Length: 258
Image (tube, rainbow, N blue to C red; front, side, top):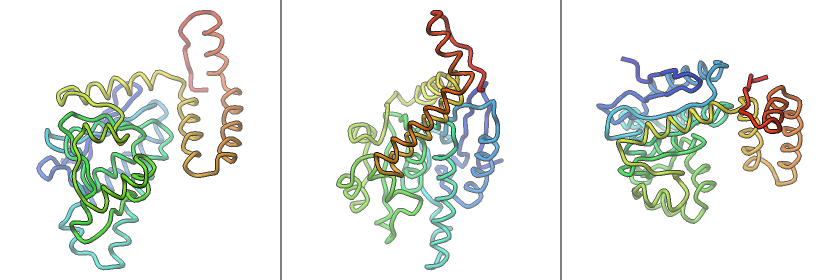
């Protein structure tokens, strides 16, 4: 049984972490398989949006595999962290919107995985946290970098230093989660949102991600320069001409991805 499942559903795809008996803990095999799946999805021009979720009813991903982690020394620990960072950076830079359907525990590496996605829709039963401090380490898959950008430095430090879990309602309140749904509806609602995004102009979707991500990588002036450049590039596409023509003609646009 593969540790990661990929289902293509028209113009969007669903990626499922598939170790439910281990609460979808992120071991080396799963991370490598996830990297391979992301490579395939990134190269597939028919897929315009992605949903990431966890198998089973309890967990999105309960964190890194502690058995593997326990074997690391200082050098191995750095390689351990860098491996997860590379895979999660692939998600963030996929060029297609990726939405996490958080259907249960999102702890440690699982929380970091959710944060690497562009948006997070959660079950009302979901729980989030960075409990690494309780193991004598720190978050290593990007948590110390992404969490402050999402919820602010003070709240991020509270979560990282205390190592406590928070429920889905608090995660929504602090901006870690975009939307909450009843547990039985979270995947279907997330897929419906992904399908709505996948119907939009593919090149514009990529451009929106590119320009918005520049906000966390550059100064505001540099970001505005990138925004203007990307805006100009989209004005040169056939989809732009189709979108504006459809607006003027009061009809639905038919985008071609060109």
